[in-house]
View 1 (cartoon, rainbow, N blue to C red):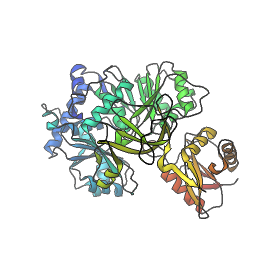
View 2 (cartoon, helix red, strand yellow):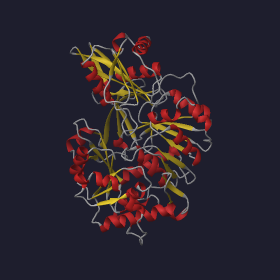
View 3 (cartoon, rainbow, N blue to C red):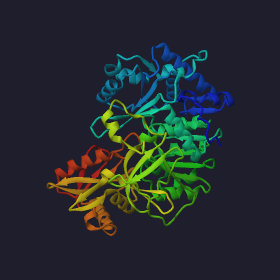
View 4 (cartoon, one colour):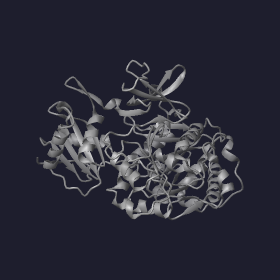
Length: 536
């Protein structure tokens, strides 16, 4: 296993060069239609860098990429880094208004997209120089390009946008050094090597794509891209056909791939060694299903914000626990991350069982938020001369030194003088309903805040008010009355973000609208943008 092989590298532009020399004909990346070996990927990335430089793109310029799931996006990103520029992937389904905001914020020197997308957004992006993915596919090899344009580890590698509390996206600015350090730290757990193959599930505007595409490539592993919609039969077939060794999927997508477990038994996944999940709390039953069907694999429960390179802590699970009901811990920090737990006064917590806010430090940290100095300053704490990112997540230490996630600081509410952590209510909902996911928040009814819950299903379930009433009775056996949801809703296929996460904000806003216009306590949604009342 190549535990550390990026320490001497300056930028991400060089991540496949050594593999192009040592295993030139080995598969590097495929989307199922087009494939590139490591030597082909390196040559194509050099050709992209040459084309960008010829178009006037200079070191430090931003390149906006409408992130289509295609083989060509990989040499596009590496070529951007070779040219010394900054990779800025955005959701290909972004509406014109959001693209206009991103254009004005990022001020890109060039745009990369499909020809169809370039034509569709001509009014918004037409004044910016462009390169199409189709054009990348036909680029001719060029003589060696001056490597990485003199770039350094402190240069910005990428800007990834997350939702912002102010109503506009926040661009997380990450340096080459931070990403390369993260690669080395995380791979001590993942164990990618030149014989590995990873299934990419994440869309390329989402931080997990760095983890499931560029990290494995840097260790000589092949990457198999999946299409935009994570359809269970297609994903399992692709895992079987390409002998996938590493599956990386956020909790919601892993639940979708797993289903009731029966489909797993119809595919030969004997090459599988590692299942990596996280981003949201993962159902214990899903993890048990993989461990029982494929003895010998490792399931890694990961935790980490985009601001610290997507994974900061891990908990490795090697044995199924049939009777387990509590969520798995988020574990221990990677060797490239420092953790600190603090109370409301900022004092350090070391005793087990005491909840505090988790702070993260070390070389994986972002530089800041693009063009948002005030939000950047608010995101960090300076403690004993070291910079720590304030996660806003509440955790406590277990007796063995691992960390257990307790919920979001902003998910802690007070009702009638009682402090309630909504994550505990969410856990009860998931336990009772066995749903794919659940979100919990406050909605207003008759001028008073009440707890509301939304459970998520992929579809195929018959829901009624009577069934939700039964759910509420079961929750009452798990939680005190003041913590029980007063409003419950189910959505079948709705309110999902392109990253595969539940759209908590959108679901609760839609439920608030429904509650404002109805006296009902139970609601249903079948993929539309609104909820309908259900009779009890």
